[in-house]
Length: 293
Image (cartoon, rainbow, N blue to C red; front, side, top):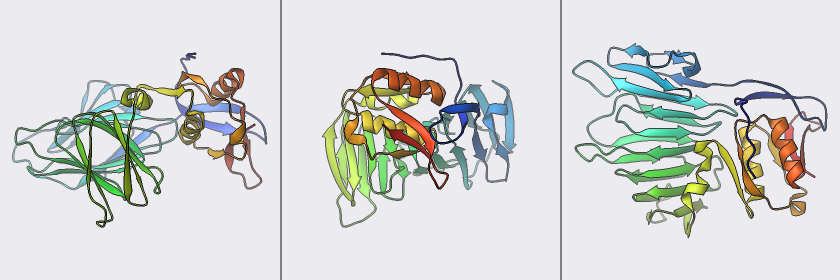
């Protein structure tokens, strides 16, 4: 079952207990550079270069896609810039080495505005999918979270690190080495269509259909018949809700995919129609929750 809509992602407001989405307004991402420049990429004119510094410019390639480019001569590595996404927003950032990073909602990537000639290192909070570009000198690329370090040369992979007690790494192409922050545990290498789950600083490896697991970067929530609770967790995170799982045992498994750019009211209506009964409410402390009926 596929449900489509032309609505854009955004921020929502909820009324009293039991009410669905009433108001849906545009959301955004923010890029912050080392010289203090702060940019909302949605405000940029497509295909127009904007100079950030004497050695750096930014270009909006299309909606939700921005590219950083180096300019001038005598380039020197500089301190990091940052991109932060908020609820119901995802962005693609092309770094100055050509690496593409697809950043999911409520995530943050810290990156060198200009890479050095040795190792390339970025830091991730939340979830990001990486297509790493090989350099002429075959410099290694590292993605650091608080819990682990992933080392690659040129490959396609995804890291989800919202939950500090469980970090997921999925490999689509190439190979990556995963090193837990706790040096007591050994590094592991995973292959395409494998996932590594880091829990308590130990790593568990299993097979997975990577392309379906990474559907978020293409704008979909994909239900495969046995992941309904996981997808409700993804939906709750996307809309900055807290998932109430007290009735999780009542869940009906669901097959289908839903575009992530629908508004929350439409999504809940569709889930209820399919037999996955949920509602949005505020608890007594004012927390917005997605409740399983």
